[in-house]
Image 1: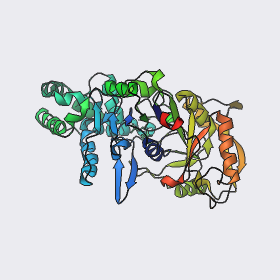
Image 2: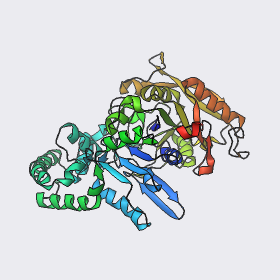
Image 3: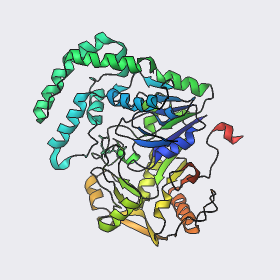
Length: 434
Ligand code: IMP
């Protein structure tokens, strides 16, 4: 079956954008299935730099469909800006498809995100303040706007009349700034969005399943990472969607037995943004050194990312949750020059050794990493595009990851360029298997 998924195996920012772009070359469609414009990556093509947050990265490749599945929440106003980058560069949106069941992020969701965060005070999540949580809250509370509503103006008027006052009452309660929108203004906004995107809205579940039946290559592009999953992540310091493999099915309308390969994107060290436990975090100079070396600053918020050693408890957990068939190890080159590299293989909590990721954040806060120390390497000066030419110690590092997780390494990325990608597996799509 020609389906392939890319899932972040840590707290997001694993470098999925580059791996997606690499694997998208032979895909017929790239599908996003969860999250919203809290995600983001920068793609450079020739002289143009594109910053994508909602549009799937496939949109930049001619002849491929870029599909926004039902599990995504869409900020239409921000997506209009994203689309403008493309049209300004002479590209069209013809290959875009948007699920009629995807939910819409409204301005009041953004305001509520900010107000809820300040109200939480010292237990704030550290969200991106894009309105992601409140938009998913409304989806579950059954009072959200869906992309399909863009095509039905009478429905918008009816819903807006009820929802606008409700949301303003909530904002008052939290002491937040009211949403200045009126029902008429909201109807006008939906009309504008309909003009821009209405023609791309359809039942994407039918579309994706038909394409799979026809033997087309479908790439599912995960946003964020497993540890930000609303069920399995470091709750409550998580995002509000299902970022693990199961999210592909509910978020795009396909059955579990239609997913063939699952690539887990694993950065050679660990980063996270926002609040929440991080067992292998490095502080002070050590943390700052890795942050600087890895250029660890957010695409969406510009925030500096917290940095630490690779955590294989997390990697094993992610592999189990998503059925990861191969690792794509990213940013391995950032570890160049370390004499020794530490890898966390277990946690010590209250004198007990734990190999599985616990649910309790209190326990995680008390967890001490159990490290194994591996030999580092100087640089990758001998790299000629092959696995063979990587430093011996780097290959040992990769072997250690494979053995500890039981998952083979399929791709290794040692820099932002296409040429800095070692494809070990090389059989991602059926045509490549022959
Ligand atoms: P939200 O998704 O904006 O609600 O934020 C919830 C948590 O997820 C915060 O800790 C964010 O920093 C984190 N988060 C959301 N999106 C990303 C991402 O794309 N990369 C890394 N962290 C993210």
